[in-house]
Amino acid sequence: KANRRFHEDDSVIDIDGVKVGGSHFMVCAGPCSVENEEDTVELAKALKDAGANTLRGGAFKPRTSPYSFQGLGIEGLRILNTAKQETGLPIVSELMGTEHIDDFVEMVDVIQVGARNMSNFDLLKALGQTKKPVLLKRGMSATIQEWLMSAEYIMAGGNDNVIFCERGIRTFETATRNTLDLQAVPVIQKESHLPIVIDPSHAAGTRYVIPSMAKAATVSGANGLQIEVHQDPENAWSDGQQCLTPAEFKDLMQHINILAEME
Ligand code: PEP
Ligand code: MN
Image 1 (tube, helix red, strand yellow):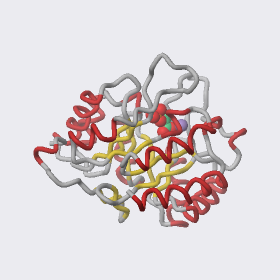
Image 2 (cartoon, helix red, strand yellow):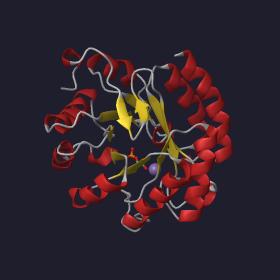
Image 3 (spheres, rainbow, N blue to C red):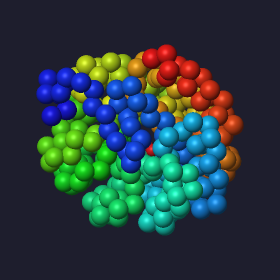
Image 4 (cartoon, rainbow, N blue to C red):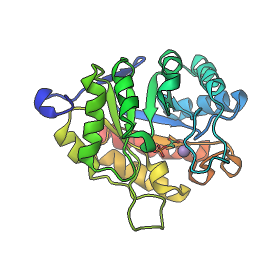
């Protein structure tokens, strides 16, 4: 069902009024983890002013260490909803297991499947039973073919609202956290009618690499971006080293708006 053979035109996915796919460009920004209401609302306002059209924030976090901050849980989703009320920005948040699926259907606009869960087929099947847009991140060691099949798992159940998200893959290179595979953009767009967005933050793992990769992703024809932003990256509870400040994000967006217009 994800194959272009069955759907010649680009699919356009509706995220509570914000469209992504075809000529519609998604700019999803926000903190890695939601930390508190005041900062989240303030950041959401700054992101909206800068040109973001969706807000991301992790409430359930897949951390490498069990001793690292694991997210605020349902309270994080509640905070995101307050930010949505204040700004109108639809929200994107990661669901790690089927246990909280009903809460996510009720409280978020896009359910993110993280890289570590791309092959969690029970989770994908459960999401197929909903109509919620799903942002399907590429597994860090997944081939494009495997990634397409994960989308198929969701669509097989009747949910056609899938957005691919390339976030870097593991290679021998250690100068960056992962290696951004921008070739995935033309390959996915040839194989599939579904939109693909690029997350340069988790690919780079380090702040200074992000603006050039975000611009390159936009010119590559990707259907959007997902970027981590934090008011005080040094003190962020997760992924601070790869978060842009709101000022850096605003500066970047001035370039992205021009480049996305040209595409
Ligand atoms: C995230 O978006 O914060 C995240 C954990 O991403 P990924 O699954 O791509 O590592
Ligand atoms: Mn993160």
